[in-house]
Length: 459
Ligand code: UTP
Image 1: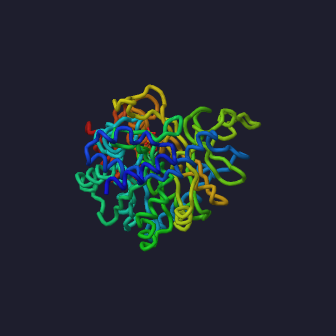
Image 2 (image 1 turned 120 degrees about the horizontal axis):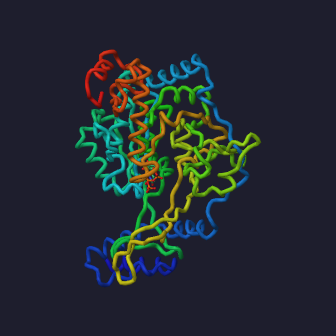
Image 3 (image 1 turned 90 degrees about the vertical axis):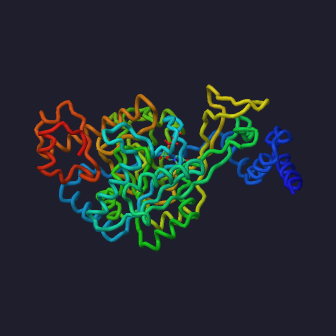
């Protein structure tokens, strides 16, 4: 039985010049041999060969790029803003909104041992990134008097640990029937010659296939069917690592529903030309994002006649997708991007190697590539200070320290706006629970008095 499998695998490897995958096979225990053969048999070698051609052909073509127009949220007057928010609340009340968080990445820059969503950025409450999102959703559900189903994308690597984290945290008070974990898939990583890498003598190096896999994964897992059954019309999509994300923001939902294009996206002005965030644009006349790692330097630096960045709308991974559009994307094949990364592997003798420079290509789908399937999308500028605190690295820019600081500053601004005297909050780092306030509203005189009278740092 094992021999027949071995013969089949050998033929496959020889057809695709990947024979090195069996170089340690003979010396492995039987259980490991079987495991390795199963992993190899599961690889789509034809797909891997075509993915490697992306590397050889130097990545995604940058075609016919032009700037895109965005709605400026701050330019709408108060009445219009309130109308959009009312429309969004109506959608929430009617149960037409689902939240999707993508939490399947490897978080390699952060270097946290567990799932990225379990990371504690060091707030007084020590709430994890998952808990911050859960409580914002719970606050909205309470006001809307309606459940907001929450779909959490994991990877095979962190699926079990993510579920255990939620279980051990009692699902943060979320209703179990409204939480849905679904797994993205993985793909082998290859070296510079297109050879599939081994992570160990009996293990292929597999990497998650990018956040853009969420559409196919939502479909495969039955989550899209579940949404249809519930009467969902809009999927709110965000990353797990934005500590300030206004999950299922009613005003954003209302704006998207008003224009009713297949998708909507929040954007912030790029802070400086080389900022590592994607650039919203039109590509061949279609809405698109060019990822910073794929963007030619001229595009990043290009300025318009007024001297402002021509491609100033940066992507912060906050989107809304109409359910019919998500279904369409789930049935389409997005294009893969190759990411050049450092991956642990083994040498010719089977000893572990941790490279100092990128030695591998991972293949990933990007969620924003879905935009090109729509003729038009709503892009709306938003306030970076209030909504975008990415936690990407251990220290420096986009780290737990910067995210924490942004949260404290935002919450201080809420307290000041609610009437707390400046001296009561000076030199204090106060955290307001998302269960108390979603975006600065409802800070009652009692709470404000507590801030004034005590030294508490959490509300
Ligand atoms: P990033 O591109 O920042 O990747 O993900 P990452 O895995 O978190 O971190 P690095 O690059 O290894 O340091 C942006 C969002 O997309 C999710 C991440 O969990 C994060 O919420 N993601 C990324 C997935 O869900 N799956 C993937 O395959 C990649």
